[in-house]
Length: 467
Image (cartoon, rainbow, N blue to C red):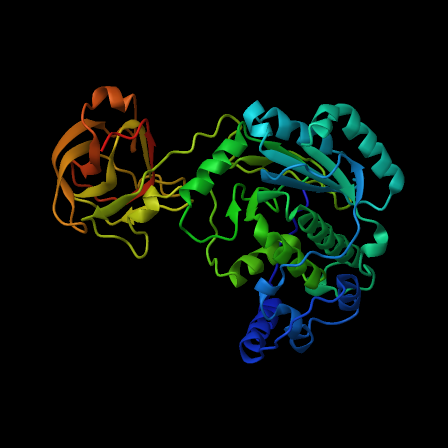
């Protein structure tokens, strides 16, 4: 994996703030995208100067044009039609180990026939060693010939002449010169890959070249995207490691490519991605669990150093994301700080946290429309606060809504069961509940001195009842 250690980035943040100030103060009409090759070569020999970059960095929305470089098709041809998701991989020669073929194999093997129709895989061989590239193309073509013929797999390369100068760069954070060169080139590699993939599909996910995929990961991704309809996001994360499993709208790829090129020598790519997300007004990380992608490499692409990092949230088997239909959430418990009720109902890695609950306290869910439920799962407590669970509680579903829109509640409830060891899970609910469900609530049946964390509430629906 090509994940780099983190250190203070205060100086760069200061520069970004200055850039943003200039963006607000200085407006220039008639922005014209100049030759990117010249721009990135010039940045190699200059410090990051806000005045110098005010023309290009003042508005990321201007970065809609593609970067003017030529790509070599090593295998495959241009896609005949647009897909739903492009999966991008960039790979270089490693001193120890090579996991690229296993990564490609995992992508295809973990996808169903129907899912394969909706994906495109683009592999960029980004090493300047032509013999290595030729050998890898031969191996890929032999092992995945049918995917190449079917238009699902493309292998590309960008000639060295299009790269900026990679020697004598700024040694930010006291990184050794060879490490600076490695991570700076990696930024350019990714920029060229993003630029190529900008118009291939609706969405794009970046993987590294040493990754194992969860089964039916595309179906899981689609379900998450559907659940986020109507909400603003720049990046959705399906792994907590490095540049693995980061999902983007394809229309944002040109801006991200330009951004990586502009600051390619400043810091590692995963740090730059955080700044990019923030500049486009997504302040918080939106990460989903379980993770869909796992790092499987043992040796890093940087000097062959050992890298044993694993994502402990990864689940290889089918990732069954709950539906969690739209609902109003409320509680009469004393909420701690900003750990409000909505955070337990989200698929994001957040939770509800309330102070010591008493008998009769509740956490309520009122659905926008009546639903049929097939499965319910509620988890309380966390690994570091294992005693903040619901020690005595029950789960109930209700019908017969009364009250106004903001104060709606059910008048009749049916108890489905008790919590055991802080958790609750039930299946085949549609066979046990004969009415359409309007509400669900978690009821505290005995006071406790411990606080209560509701880590996740997951609801799977069966069919939409007739209205």
